[in-house]
Length: 298
Image (cartoon, rainbow, N blue to C red):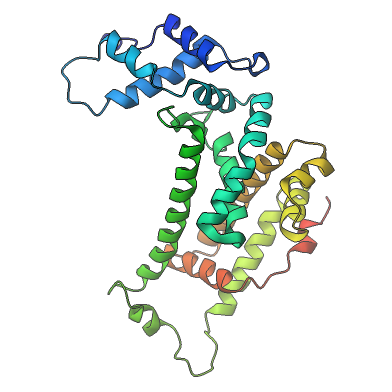
């Protein structure tokens, strides 16, 4: 059996940095948890260096002293799912995240951009049965607020590229849209014959996915999308913290998207290009009134 790699961060180092982080006692953040977070940060810092041996303890200690320990402690506690830490995070960063998102994506897209980030930070996806939080990728080398703004900007760029890639699927010339234009009806006033069938399939799949949700999840989506309530208002109505409301709305949205795509790919046998075309038609002008489905009770 090959030897285990050396441990970069001793428990004594972790205890010292945890003390510097000044994490409140109700976050229940242990030195062992913080040690794992610090190990991850050190590994990230030195992984790109072309060295023949592991960094020495002095180099590691100097690096650890440069970290934003308080921000790293908050990220560690939030990643662990500690409710008081989450409440502190939302109270501290909610307004600045919303302002940053609106500056990046405009007023209409900013709110959704900011709210969707909460789900990723909480960690909706699981890998080998373990919930993975976006906070696990914060290493404390910058301030938490700076890192969050960078994540928002990257998510916006990713969405922009995804939308552009939709066009490029049918535009092999790659830029002027002529490939797409050749496949769509000429502007003679006649409607695209594929539009209505694709929209009908999309509507049926969305309604089916929404009905499969728990009634309380449908109610959250109705409050958010139909009544346009804020996360704070939704939380008060449902007796839960707004961070909880955000996480559950994001989880429900992901469940709906997975169900819709599974139905369109599996039941309707749509190709990837056809699936993207469904989304494109729906995005041009959302034609469905889903309030009846969202308000339905089991």
